[in-house]
Length: 164
Ligand SMILES: [Zn+2]
Image (cartoon, rainbow, N blue to C red; front, side, top):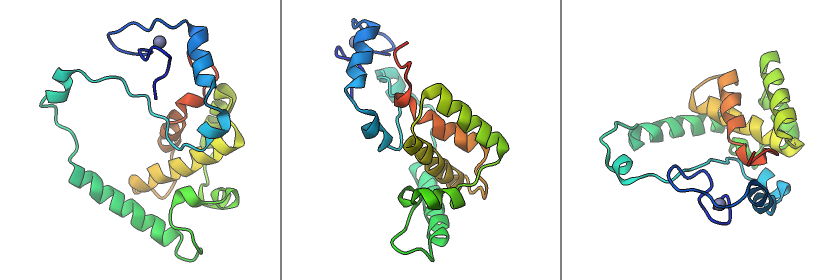
């Protein structure tokens, strides 16, 4: 989706002609409950031709595939005794409490994010589930602060103060 009516909000080169009030109003058309149901909000800026064709070394798809297969195997084991439950995103709120345990520092971080970003209880559960998946991808038994921070980062559209 575009982030404003003219489509150039946050564009690296072009100027957005929408006032901040207009951007805010445009984004508010997408309801909170709808955004709550989306796991990852990622802001993508246009890529210019030089960047597309640069020889910059990126991670190979095959390597990423291996990591995903391992993370799926971890989730297979986790839910082996649960009926109709195959991956983290399907967990009920109760299940999230038992599976996605976080330490005091993590609690502090998520509490701060909830207050600062005005997150709902549903968004809170999503953050925990996504951070569990990020930890699985890193083959980490525990959800670490860095996993939580990354999951919080994916809630960018929840921010009240979105366009300043
Ligand atoms: Zn605009």
